[in-house]
Amino acid sequence: MDSDDEKLKGEKVEGLKSETTLPLFNSSTLPLPAHSVRVEVRGLRKSYAGQQVLKGIDLSVERGEIFVIMGPSGSGKSVLLKHIIGLELPDEGQILIEGESILTPGVMDKYRLAMVFQSGALLNSLTVGENVGLYLSEHRLKTAGEIDRITDEKLEFLGLRNVKHRSPSELSGGMKKRVAIARALVIDPQLILYDEPTSELDPLMTVTIGKEILDLKHRIHVTSIVVTHDRDLAFGVADRMAMMYDGNLIAVGLPEQLRHNRDPIIQKFLTADFNLNDKEPA
Ligand SMILES: Nc1ncnc2c1ncn2[C@@H]1O[C@H](COP(=O)(O)OP(=O)(O)OP(=O)(O)O)[C@@H](O)[C@H]1O
Ligand SMILES: [Mg+2]
Image 1 (cartoon, rainbow, N blue to C red):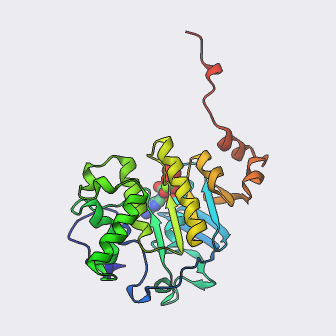
Image 2: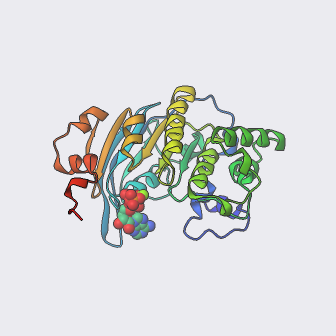
Image 3: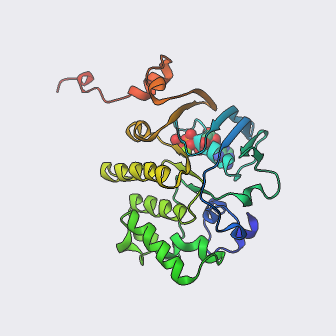
């Protein structure tokens, strides 16, 4: 990752250095036949400064599956995703892609993995279009004309054609999120990880992103792992779901199985709502 970082165009992105290099894959491997990958997480543990954040995660996500992870803030969802794409190293346990540890030399270069970060991680020194095409241009994967065409296609897809030449700093939070998704899509990933893809989006755009996640599954059979607090999105796209709580996956199953799970933590999370009747009369 460090060598990729050095290639960035001179912009300091505090705390996000490695994130700006995504999508993650090796230029020499393009083009690959489109197919999805199977992901396995085994016995994953991670602590930061003595605080255990992941407490033994076991998880399998099948090829072409949309796997949704829900859970309270701070439960370890983003840390788990960062381990799956190798941005963080486990204290114990391993991550396998198609049965091979991601720490085995060459494995991470073999597959097209992309992540849409919670933060977006866009470079303000580049235009929106340049951000989207960045990975392809940095690694000289396509001609300038092809990169432009792919960039336009992804921007169009997410309703962003009219902001192609703007700086990300001029966009709303929701637009930035969509740019980050467009950027992840340029490599036609085999695995795409979404960290809160709709957290700053209005309901209509949330539906668009949900449809996009489903569409990608059907069109390119990509494997998707979606971290979200949005219950509508979660139940709208998930093949299977997991509930993460305090560093553990406390339930994994079909959406209906989670919906009917009697665990009070899960029920509380899935049914939390405003109860206007509780309000004191004025
Ligand atoms: N690099 C790091 N150094 C130290 N602590 C960290 C680091 N990354 C995450 N943590 C801690 O790990 C815990 C889980 O963080 P994480 O970002 O995975 O939560 P989350 O479930 O994604 O929450 P949210 O829903 O708010 O995004 C938090 O207590 C956080 O402070
Ligand atoms: Mg998070």
